[in-house]
Image (cartoon, rainbow, N blue to C red):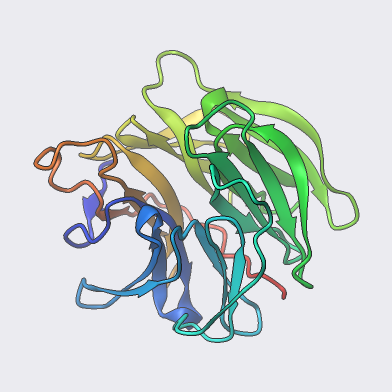
Length: 285
């Protein structure tokens, strides 16, 4: 398959696409600009600045959104994000920032961090509970990236990018993440490194390959079953959405590229792979 751009590039480092009908369809972040972008029907975007970094966003079940900023969390009571309630920073070290995140079936927000210099073990995967309590759960992470849950909710898939591995955890509301194990290890023939991910209704895991110009789907048994090609090197994340939840939206980045290289880098792309995606899980707080 080949993905096509849905509009001209609107971001430098597009990340974390999320489809949620109630907030207008597709939102994503321009991470290093600290902006959240909402895609309009005319192909343009509405842009809201939320902080130095806009790392990840998810809807709140009662309306509004939760946003991961550079070193903390912000809450909005409406989908416009014009008024944010910013919680205190979770750490003092300015060399570490938040990166990707997502919600579990119980409504907790899981969001991971990384060091700006990408030093080994500089990051942590945090759990934010509905009462806005934040707790470090997985330490010694380098570049915390995509996280998502299987259709039955019993397995979480997670990426720490330099490991070139999709990790699996057992998950339940009572125990959280346990039993970490490798699910898919990318061999040397796979170009690029795993970044964001999304799970489909058949249990397949779609993984963006940063530096690899592609998204790979691994079926429920961990076998490569689909490849989506893109004309941009830095593919960052993906999600399912649209009216029938069968459109795969893919974000890309201009990071590290010369000004006139890859003119579509930073755009959002889409394709119709013929499967239903899992719906976005909201934050319960």
